[in-house]
Image (cartoon, rainbow, N blue to C red; front, top):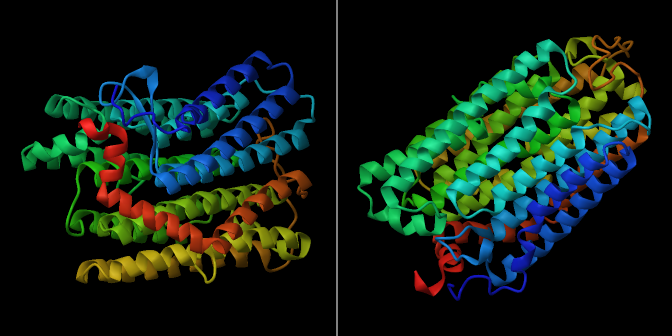
Length: 517
C-alpha cells in the first residue's frame, strides 16, 4: 500500500458522511410506521454528519487533505475519499442547510397533517440525497463522482414528483429528462478519459492529462465543462431549472436550489483546476459567465411568479461563480469558493421564505399579494436579510463574497476587469428584482388569502398563518447567513488557502498518491 495513504488518524471519518445517511435511510424505511422514529433518525444523522464535516474542515485546514482508501486498495487502483479545505467547507455548509430544511419540512407536515402521519418515501429519499451530496464532495475519481450524482439525482426524481399534480409531474419530467441526458454524456466523457489516459483517479489524471495532445485534452476538458455546466445550470444549459424547481414542494425546492447546482459547480471547479490548469484567464468561460449573469438577472425581472423569479436569480448567480473560475488564479477560485458557500445558504433561505409567504397568501403570483408588512412583519424581516445578502449589500456575506470576486477580476487584466463590471450590473439588477418583490408582497393594502387550488398535493397554502416551528427553522438559516457575515474574516482566510491549494494542485496530488507517484 502507498505509505502516504490513510496516515491521518481521522481517515476513518471520511466514509461516515456517506454511510450514516444511507443507514439512516434504511432505518426510516424499516420504521416507516413510526413518524417520530423517522424524524429523529433524520435529524440525528444530519447533526452527526455536520459535526464530522466540522472536524474534517479543522483537520484539513490545519494538516492538509485527509485521505481514506476504500477496501485497503491505495489510489489510483482503489477508490479514494478525500477531504481538503474546499470539500470539507462545502460539506459542512451543505449539511447544515440540509438539516434546517429537514426541520422545516417536518414542521410543515406536522402543521398540515398532525404528528401521527408518516411518509414512506420522503425521509429515505431525503437522506439518500444527502448521502449523494456528501459522496460528490468527498470522492477522488470520476466514476465515483458519477455514482454520487446518480444517487443524488435518483433521490431528487422521487422528491420532485411525489404527491403532486399531473401538471407539476410533467414539469418535473423536464428535470428528469435533462438529468438523464447529462448523466449519459458524463458516462461517455468518463469512457473517453479512461481510453485516453488509462485512469479515472483525479490525482492520477492531473499528471496524465498533461501528456495528452493539446487538442484531445481540450476536447475532454470541454466535455466535462458541458456535463457539469448542465448540472450547475449555466447559460445556455439552464433552461430546465426555471421550469422544474418552482413546481417542487417548498422544502424540496429550497434543498435543490441550495445544494444541487453548487455540487455541479464544485465538480467543475475541482476538475478544471486539477486536470486542465491555465496560466491566463479563460476567455470562453468569461463569455459564458457574462451571459449567465445577465440572462438570469433579466429573466428574473420578467417574472410574476416568485419562485420562477428566484430560480432565474439562482441561474444569474451561478454566473458569479463561473466568473471566479474563469479568472483562473488563486484569488478568483477562492472568491468562487466563498461565493458558493454563501450562496448555498441564502438561496435555500429565500425559497423557504417563499414557501412561508405562499402558505399565508395561497399564491406565488406577485400581483395577487400585498400588505404582508402589516399582517406578518417578522416574515418581512426573514425576507429582507437573505434578499440583501443575495444582492450583496454591505456588510452582508454576499457583499464580502462579491468584493473578493471584484478584486480578483480587477487584478487579472482587461477582460476580467470588464466582466467584473458586469458583476456590478448583475448585482444591481438582482437588487431591483428583489426590491420589486418587496414592494409587491409587503407594501400596500393587505389582500385576502386565496384558496388552495390543489388541496391534494404535498403542501397546504392559503392558510393565512405561519406555524412557529417553520418560522423558527427558516430563522435558523437566516442566523447561519448572518454568522457567515460575522465570521467573514476567518472564512475568507480558509477559502483563500483553498484557492491556493486548487491552483497549486500539489497538496491534493501528494495526499492521494503519496511519494510513490
